[in-house]
Image (tube, rainbow over all chains, first blue to last red; front, side, top):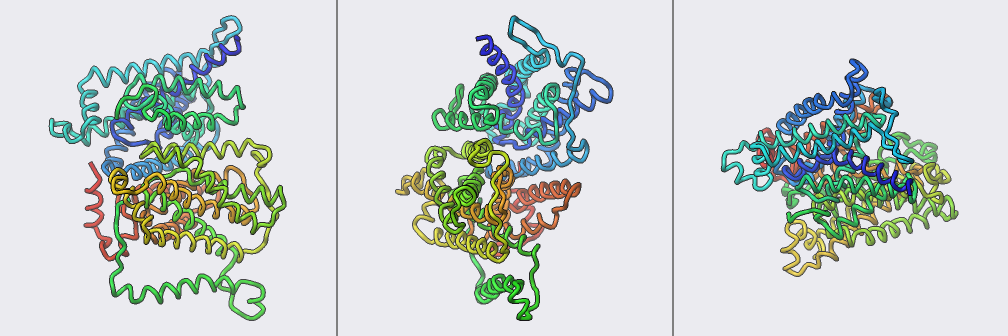
Length: 287
Length: 341
């Protein structure tokens, strides 16, 4: 029984990471209708910033998260404004291919700058955890979960309680109407992508605390972000949170069944079943 | 994926046939000069080992890009799981030849069959999805099948499968060339039948196609299966040619992206677009490819090329050979304006 409880806790902690990764991905997809295949690469850029600050100036990984967000926001804004805006009205295959190309470029640049070596961030408390009977909760993973919930709260506040959020939602609902009421579309697209990238960067910062990072470590996260968004449903922060936690649970519990080699296979079988049976996701709304 | 009918100007059409036949004869006959018999007869050596590898790889990508074009270009369903068919075809030949001791030609006939059966099973539920959902569900299929194969002991698990080596560059070159010809001819034939028009109708507007009486589900699954059969065939040939297969070399998602890229860069939805794309891109990739540290730069080059093609020539290079558009600054500015914010 305690083994099961431990699995559930680990699943939820992992799910928290997926929530953090998927928030920005979901925003960009929902508002801009872009499935951003470079999302995982942006996540890993965040990881490298945290790693760099930690090894160079011994800045605690959790303190470097705002810096990740800031740097990634600038990168994301520039990418959308300079490049992706050029194909925003093209068929979806083109944005797909373009973001794949961007992913290739970012990963290659990371390889040039940081080499393919494994890098890890190891603050003094990284091995410790809270012991409750036979169940252990690692501090660092718990911190990740807390940050994930803070991110979800921040995303909800931005979208529902600020003028910029209202403008972003307006662009997502109807681009032409948004332009008619005076919203600068180019700026808004770039801003949305920048916010998505900033959230990706924070997620990357968390990831670097419990996983060794390499330039290619981001690719699985793109797929997982997609699975989370499908699972929860597009267009609501609460759906992303539910989707992420469920996905984490499925992955951990699934691994204890057929074995760790099947993590992706299980995830995608679930994904395909959800897509076919309930195409709008668990909490999805009408498109 | 913008519809364009291929129209060759009359002046070009007069020379097209003789030039085409001459080129084809050249491609088919040049390799013959590199056999030992030809050497003894005193023919000059026109092609070497490396040439064969590259030419066979190009032919392989012509098959994959053309096959993708049938489901992605003609039908408008951007499949990111075609590489699963390639892998299944390769593993069919791999298992039958290395574990069961079947002769290669017999195993090669089975490869497209297993790929088609698989396409039928996953195609029926997946082809109900559209757009991003279809793209990523198929991507998931590709990843999942690769991972399952990587874990199954009878399929060599993560070690992969070794096939008895067949030393004949000529054989595999002609086999791939044959498969490429088959793929191109299939596309050409499809576009001239009721079936082909049905696929184009689905791409342009699926509801409208259904209303005018196109059996959309049947047509989509059929297109998916044809693409699977062709890709599976290429995979089967690759297995014996390479004589070693594992998850990484036959289920690579990057191969899937590459075939899409070739079809799109060449001109999706046309007969010769994917061929032009496969030849030009593969040659560029081979030129850029360098060992060790240079590989990174070739990846960056590929990424930049991808971005430039997608932004500036979304209809593919074939658009410039149809007599409708000319490559000029004005054309680039216009395509840019069509899609940008």
